Amino acid sequence: MYMKIQYNSPVVLTYTLICVTITFIDW
Image (cartoon, rainbow, N blue to C red):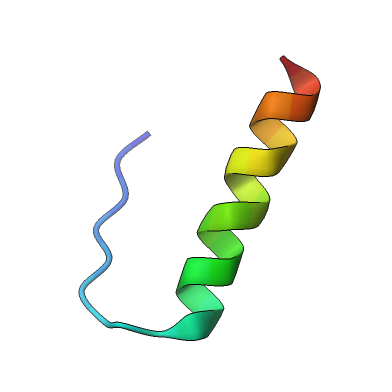
């Protein structure tokens, strides 16, 4: 999973956190 965050956007950070959380829950 390649993620290039080029903008310091709270929405992008929140989305990344949600993805990580879902991954940990699924794990």
